[in-house]
Image 1 (cartoon, rainbow, N blue to C red):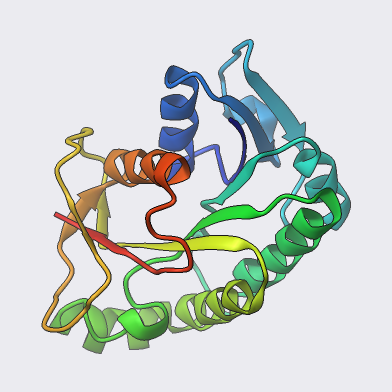
Image 2: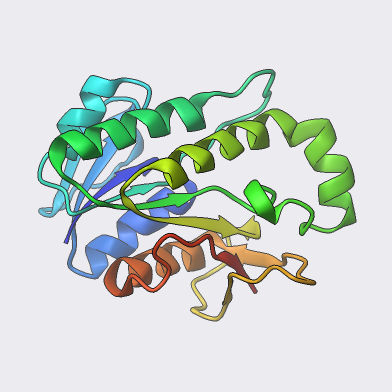
Length: 209
């Protein structure tokens, strides 16, 4: 499969890039600084650009079978719009290129998963530190859900740099659930599985240990 990864230089996106290449997929990485990838591969195409630049997103989108959006932002967060504005560009480019499959990583606390992160996360970290981030992730999710693409929104629990375990839960019923930990490698593993199975089309699975 031809996969476009937006946000491939670090975190979940980098794990996804490595695992996708190992699994035989052809990957296009849209990155602001190609030198940060520090990898060359016969099935890797690197497009220099930015999710906020609609022209570079459109260039990267040509010939893709699926798009995986794994972007993040670094602190401080006085005002955050990159998730919603970038996703708007991705959806527009998908429509122009005829690409239908989108997997987007948001996080625990986005949309109707709010209130399932535990006391410290829900009552202290989110309102005091992460409010601008999750306000824009909410806008991002709303844009995706209103689109006509075949989407899956992935909401990981608390992320670690631990190893790939392939041992995690995928939850769509949040009743009584408090999110746990999950490695970025396991999130990438789920994304690849979902690209092959389409089990969670138009759903928002929570991933947790």
